[in-house]
Length: 322
Image: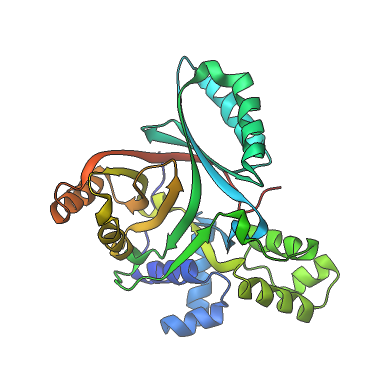
């Protein structure tokens, strides 16, 4: 059972600002929130120590690096806890896996892969099935076109929304070199890493590192800097919701609704997935069903069927492949 920690509106405001730009200084954050610097620094350290904030990362558009994001759901059969652990350990050990987590609902595990080609993914899948096919009852594979990130407006009860869309088509690749990759890996592991530390690590000047980071941002390889927030520690559960629609022509209306909803934090635009997919952080099952009822009320007859899962445990969460 997850431990829920007590946070107040000031903590939530700090979390919101770090989710918006986790690389900003404590001084800048304090100025934005009209708080004392020491107050902000203390609260951040407390939330880090309590694992409410689990890290900071650079949001990368993988397509600019030549990667395609592939998602897979598995439903198990004839397994035991021991066998499921073997499967999870195998998936976590793959260099190509970006995310691996167990789920409750329509699937048992969800995996994200970053690959340079579908042939590469096909080889990875065949190797996996050679070992574990007898334990897979059902699988579903989708290719991401875009992965749209929204700010966590529910933390501060805001309506205006900023978005960052992560593309996944390798045709959008831009120029980069090994030094750029080294900088990206550092910033995806800890977006707060100081320029001087990165410079010393790479044998460059701070000015050279600063220039390269600005170029990575200009090329939209780096889309922003976010905080890895454990929402379950502050009273929210992670739901992934997939809708099959009766009226595809109304997707733009539904997309506007999703964009404006404060608890919806991602939209997934895929090939091979559902007509409309989004991820929400909600207080409980009642809040989940209230969200569905609200959609049904505002868009009568639009939903044909739906599936959902609730995230149980994250086993791997990386932002660049090894």
